[in-house]
Length: 397
Image (tube, rainbow, N blue to C red; front, top):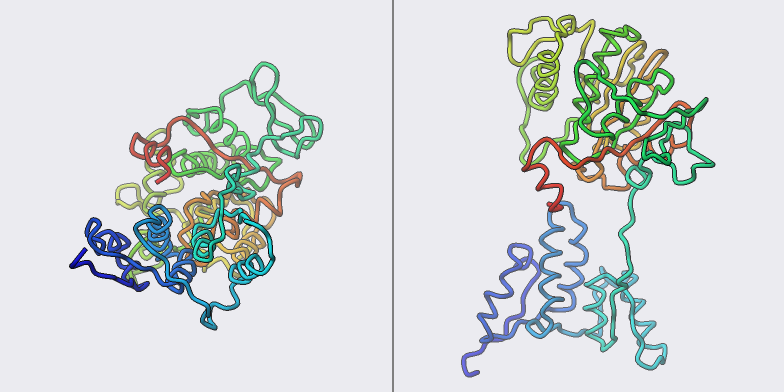
């Protein structure tokens, strides 16, 4: 083609907009070249919490349309990339003397690197992504004859059976708690664990919208105001922002926390409408409400150090945004007579230094599993808080 151009694309162009590849190609008019080191840079950025999704999209375009985008070969790798294991693996394959070797990998960048040197590659199609412990261990035992303490199993009639440390019992009843009726069997089992006085520590893992915060607050009100086994409710959560930072907020600590805990106040007011909980409020007229500090307190994670919490129900929300050290510091504050309910969704990690595997929720499940004073449950259901949330969960957004 007479006016065809040969474009060599830099990494920053792809990170600003991966679709630039198609725009520069302009149909079939121009030829696009991707330098080997751009590929290596994209490989580095694909795990970046801010740029990863953009880098992965660029990698997808390049690997899906190899006939459109040509990769430039190199005989010398820059020092900053020379220690990457993939480069050494390719060198070992090239010098092995094997006849038509096939590299088996699900790493698209590695497949592209191999193709540059004429090495054939294939996906391992039977590969199943690994799950973290908080998701893999659902709270149901896989071996009925050797049940994990405080786990569940299904009996022959399809009823859930609670395998307590002392005995087993069939959960064939519905746990109405603070006038809240569980909507699913899993919500009913969650309340069974939350209300159980013999299990001081409970973790509940679920996607957004399955009611774990609402159930935890209902159980806390039941234990403090109705059953009166505890004197106070604490709600603790890490102050992790989504998107743009709010910056420094004015006012007292309660006012500073209010934007982060508004959803909790909304849930408490909803529970108050189902059944009056006047004793936890200092004033029920204001919105957001003021709380009676002797009965109810919202605390940021940073304020826990040095405290000794006793005779209280402690709800730790968004535990997936806490580190292992933060979980250790927080849970070691729990004294006598404490019921600790830990909530989280390992797929909603907003802390840039954590991921699905090394977050606090996963660490607690991994270390506490098997203890006679601990239980875990993955909350499931056909419906969440509404049709839009259902769509988000089903689509994997």
